[in-house]
Length: 82
Image 1: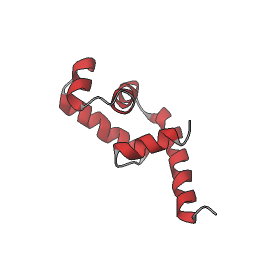
Image 2: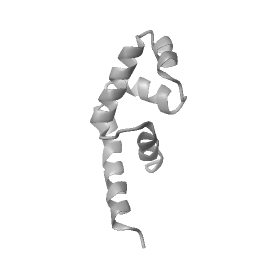
Image 3: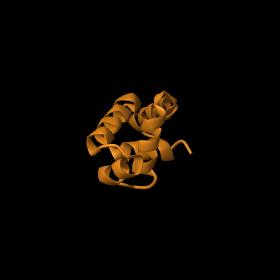
């Protein structure tokens, strides 16, 4: 039997995945480079020709919009809905 708290968590992750549509195009770019390519802030900033602070701001906005608090939570959210 699946633990009730895990079922609730999984439901929350699935809901958050649909919120990806609420991200701006730039936030989606940052998210892909950060999660898929595993680039750090400096690398993302260089690729997108923005500052590291702007990358940080985009990631903070992503975390708020998707209601996650870490890169690990983002990865779990994405992988659990593939």
